Each structure stands twice: as C-alpha cells, then as structure tokens.
Image (cartoon, rainbow, N blue to C red; front, side, top):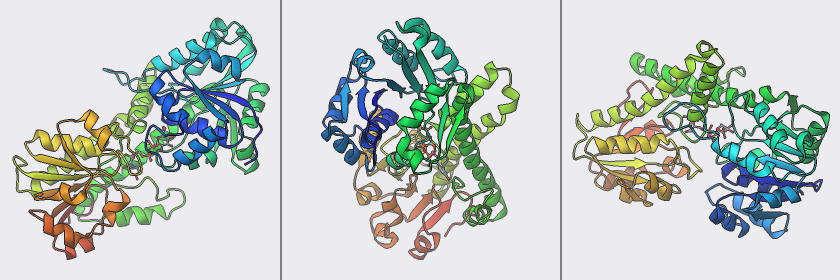
Amino acid sequence: MAGTDMRISVIGTGYLGAVHAACLADIGHDVLGVDVDAAKIEALAAGQAPFYEPGLSDVLSRAVGSGRLRLSIDPAQAAEFADVHFICVGTPQQPGSQAADLTYVHAAIDGLARHLRRPTLVVGKSTVPVGTAAALARRLAELAPAGEGVELAWNPEFLREGYAVADTLTPDRLVVGARSDAADEALREVYAPMLAAGVPYIRTDLATAELVKVAANAFLATKISFINAVADVCDAAGADVVRLAEAMGHDARIGRRFLGAGVGFGGGCLPKDIRAFLARARELGVADSLAFLAEVDTINTGRRRRVVELARELVGGSLHGRNVAVLGAAFKPDSDDVRDSPALAVAAAVQARGANVRVHDPAAIDNARAVFPELDYTTDVAKACERADVVLHLTEWREYRDLEPESLAKVVAHARIVDGRNVLSLERWEAANWTVAALGRGRRQG
Ligand code: UGA
C-alpha cells in the first residue's frame, strides 16, 4: 500500500498498540512504538508478537525489517520524533468497582505531555468513559510546554482479537472525534490508504467518538445475551436455538452474526465495557436508561453456571471425583487471551466441585496456567479426554469441530459431551453413540 510517510508514535504496545503500530508502519508511516514494559519492547523490536494473533508476526517483522517501525521505552523520544501520537494503553475494570481504571491513560498522557514542546496532535484510541477525552484535552494543555498548541482527538478502535490485522488494515469504518479541521485532516492523512479504498470515515465531536465504541460493544453483548435468553426458552419448549438464529439472521435488519448461543461472552472488552458504560451512566444520572445492561451481564454469567449444571447432570448428579475434560481455555478461538474466559471460569467451577479437570487449548495454556495454576493442562486433545466422564467443549477452535467422535469415544470413560458453543454436529456425535448436551437445543440428549 502507498503510504504518506508521517512520523507517528504509538504509546502502549499491548494488544491494540502493537497491531496499530505494525499496521501503520505497513502502510508506509514512520512509527515509534513506546511502552513501559522493556521485555515487550525487546520482543517487538525483534519482530516477535508478544501474544498470539494470526498474521501479526508477518506484518511486524516486515515493519521492523524495513526500519519503519522502531521501539522505545522513552516517551521523550516519542515527543521529539512524532507529529501524531496515538494513546493505546489498556483501561481494565477497576478492582472492587464496575468502572474503568484510567490509571494507564493518565500515566501515558502525563508522561508524554511534559515533553511536548511544539504543536502536536494526540489521538486517544483506548476505550474510555464518555467525558474522559475532554478532561484529557484540558490536562494536555496544562502540562505540555506547547500548551494550547497540543490538540487531542479521539479515534476509537473496533478490532477483534483473531482478526486484528485485517480489522486494522481494512476496518468497517473509521470514527474520529476532532475539534478542529486540522486534527481531522491529519487523521485523514494517517488513514489515507484506507480512505482511498473506500472505508467510511465519520467525523464527530469527542464525546460521540468515545460513546460509539462502548455503545457498539454494549450492542454486541446485548445481542449475545438476547440469543442466550432465547436459548433457555428453546430448552423449555423443545426448540432448537441454532436453527432459530439461522432463520432470524436471514433478516438483514437482524443478521446472523453474534447470535451464537452458548457459554456466553468473555474477554478483555465486552464484559468490562458494559460494566463501565453502566457505571458512567450512573455518574451522569441516566442509570435507568442502561439498567438492561446489568441484565445482559447477569444472563451472560448465568451461562457459565448452566454449563456446570449440565455437566453435573450428565455425570449423574455429582461432579465429585469425576474426570472432566475441558476443550478450550481462551475466551474465543484464534486467541491466547484468557481474560474473563468463560471456558476457564467453568473449568475452575467444576474443579471447585471436586472434579479432576484437564484443560486443553492449542494456544492459551501458558496464559491459563498463570491465572489458574491448580488446573491440569495439556496440548494433546486425546490426553485431555483420557478416562473422562464428561467432555466440555467451551471454545470453538476449528480443530474441535474436526474431531472424530468415534476415535475420541475410545479414550474416554463415558462418551458424554456438553457443546457449550453449539457448533458441533449433534447428528455426527450421536451417531457415534455420544450423549450430547447443549444450550438451547431442546435438552437434546442421546
Ligand atoms: C470485541 C468487539 O467485537 C470488537 O469490535 C472490539 O474492538 C473489541 O471487543 C474491543 O473492544 O477491543 P473481542 O473482544 O476480540 O472484540 O471479541 P468478540 O469477537 O467480540 O467476542 C467476544 C466474546 O463473545 C467471545 O467470548 C465470544 O466467544 C463471544 N461470542 C461472540 C458469543 O458468545 N456468541 C457470538 O455469537 C459471538
């Protein structure tokens, strides 16, 4: 892709920042990635992605190899080098609260601001409570030697883990909250190749740009909890939620995507974003308007309990002393991210009820072990299922869909499986004499 060769810094090289920095370099900009974590910077400088993301290593090594992406731990170097600075640090849930923790955003802004001596554009990409950008703009003007010459814009990110590179290079849309035409023009220049390819570009005010992001994630979470609530009705009525979702999805106003019923959503974004959105609405005095998001959250966490319950029923009433194989630890396939992973939460809950649990995942074992060291892990599916009284399919990695039910039946103690993602072929598994339980498929069991 032809680039416009701007000098850009990306502050925070976690998931979002590493992908953003590599992709901006890939489209031709000169990029400096900055992080406080020296080990991460070292890995990136060697062209290695510090997490699992299909396609990222290629873009990264190309970017580093061409000299267009350089890495540093020094924000002063970023201030010296770049004319546009992207803030890409994390905003996790605050411990003991539903609200977002803005510590890293404030540290990034403060660390950069005091070195900004010439007119510059700072662009926030982190997911923040509405109103944060306006406050940060005031703080930048106060702290930066260049004062009012430093402008803040907001440009939320919509990338999905597992598709992060494609989502960054060919996004559905670009949203830019810009107060001045100069800021708007600078961001149009940053994204020139995307705009040339016809990607929609929506300019808004700062608050709208911040809200687009959380509203989009809240909508996706609501869609998933909606179908999961309907799944319960399907179970009670003997209907099939998978066929129902397929039929509903043909309506273009509804769409099939994010109508996947099962163990529910997890990850570092959807769960914490709906909570932070509600917490912010409460501060703004409009909590009632978003009260339904608490229900969305409750439905979602209830799915995990429902899977544990199904497993308990399948093994005859008590999980104590039973061998349970858990297929999947990541919060979704094509990722090694285990933050708020439904699969791991179920594995831990089953173990807490006295079961012997063995967890398989193709990519997330190391991260899973760091969070739940007491669980038993393996990278061999057959080994995970050895002598199992029940198998729980909880993250829909492609390889699980391709499993041979006949051969797996030979290694387990009892051929029983819970399909917590509703993607296995019930017919195939039942034909191989498995007892299959699923969520929302009319309690169908062999
Ligand atoms: C989500 C959004 O999809 C991105 O647009 C956004 O940029 C990102 O959060 C973010 O805020 O950074 P991500 O967390 O990568 O992306 O994951 P999703 O693909 O949205 O999946 C979230 C969870 O929902 C996963 O646990 C997934 O298994 C679950 N899910 C998804 C379902 O249970 N059913 C579905 O039909 C779809």
